[in-house]
Image (cartoon, rainbow, N blue to C red; front, side, top):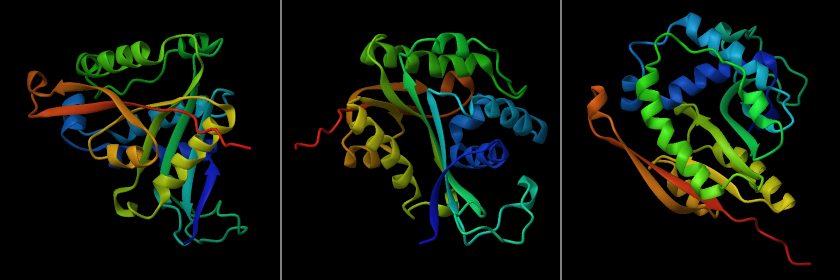
Length: 231
């Protein structure tokens, strides 16, 4: 299986954001935006995310299928030629990990980021406000821990093991450093995390109806304890 785990580079931010938009599309996405996301907004978010690459407390990873050529709209030349390390190919999955409760993090996060004009900030705040409050309540503000911030697989490439590769990188790091790991899981993704040692600590529901949608989102706040290898 020609899948390669590689760190993201600045040239990867555009395909990353396109992939994430496809993976996250659904009823909640529609409620959080006033309409379809424009190309200028996609590029604006991509340029903004490039600022985070190389931060010492964040790790951006991609899974590349070296049998597929990059999409031309994302800068691929379409010839499929590479140097054999998997760097030439199509990105099919991405993940962003971060180390929370570390010094100077707040100073970095204080920098204003790009906000797409299609985004409904009031709806977004009503969703993420309770999620972040639950995270702080569960994990505290002093002990450093790893967090899976973003995790997405292209809908056409699910069940190929790409997500598992991205998840295992972070869990190996957490175990090696003796750190707990935190994430917010959708109902669809929760079984994957449970199979890898995460447990549900609590859940937060978000009602789409007040924002013009239907149904509810259920987000499971999950924690994994580090696995210590006995010597």
